[in-house]
Length: 493
Image (cartoon, rainbow, N blue to C red; front, side, top):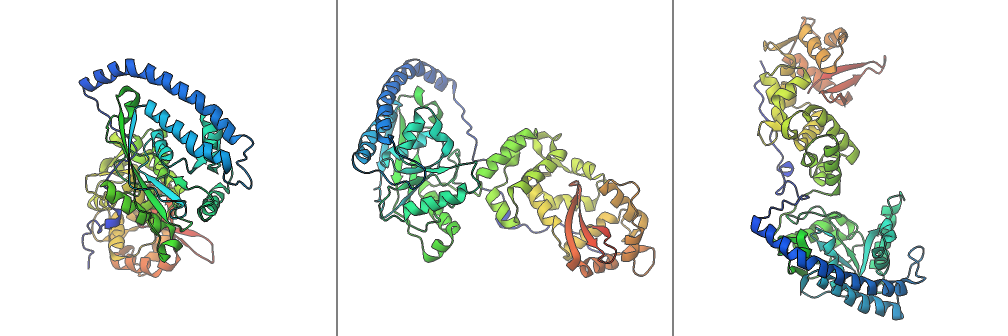
């Protein structure tokens, strides 16, 4: 019985597009009137504010030097006490508020901040700019997590030392583990240490959603107090050119982890994020900092930067992919899509790259990649398609589609010429000898392979099949003969 036509496979709803496609870019469009207003106000306000801020910094710097004099940030660090703590909590906090006031910020605080005993960790979101440091001021300058390189910054590096940050070093391979251990040590000190303030998103967004929360704040399994930061003014990037910038900081009730969440930081992070997203009225997505890295990589490969967005957390978890693997797929994708407008692959480019004619079977293969049915394949669809289709899969739908790729003349059987032609084209090897492989599948010696023979061979050898890829053109199953250690290649996709 000839195989029935195969249509696009059902989609997993969990892999559908996110509510926000690109949470990392700001689309700021100013009207002509707004541009004129910013220009005129900037002429007056920028110089005045610049002078005021300089005066505040001239007071803050010597105070910070006094506080941090002979204070170590490495080794067995202990929290500040006595006059240092008073200067840090009172004087530096006052000067910090004065600094942001000089920049034109008007802060409204809602809710009540919990003590370090009731909530050792503060989780702040959404994180959108360096102005978010205003939360640190309003929270009384708690400890933060910072890169060790930031301590070397002139003036502001000294201010950072005052909060005794948990340091992260890119040069230290054990830095991530040590950072989490230090956060846990401070969080479980019973109030001995000040609270630790963390931006769990790990990178800046455009405030259109909440992206994946990193686990660091939730590993200790202690209560976490969510803190929301809102900027009602849309012209945040033009702060110095506005009369004032409204900021709202809201302390939500501390979130106490369940026993399951204590054992699984990911669930605790998701629970806290859900509470914050509901309060903000924002959707959540599974983007993360790795998506930013992929955007940069896409730009370097002459693709549109947004082409690199894949919702890395979701893709890596569901498809068991590492960042390096996704990066390699991006390079393969760029080889096909770099000449396409918008960094998307059409079926013409798809067929051209595979060196195959556009046929119903190829269209069905294309539709397996084209998840949203818009007639193109973006990088996210490409990664999902490559990963799913590369994996051993001998279900009826996959076998039918693979059979049709070989059956070029659509007579429901594969001749050795058809078999050889597709293999040579796909693998780019002109003198490829496929005679022995063809004979192994053609068990009845008829000189052609029927659908039944092809399916039986695929199912019978499923326990010996491993996936490989040839130049990202066509995805193959390599079957190893244990006696001769030779590899025969059977194309499925």
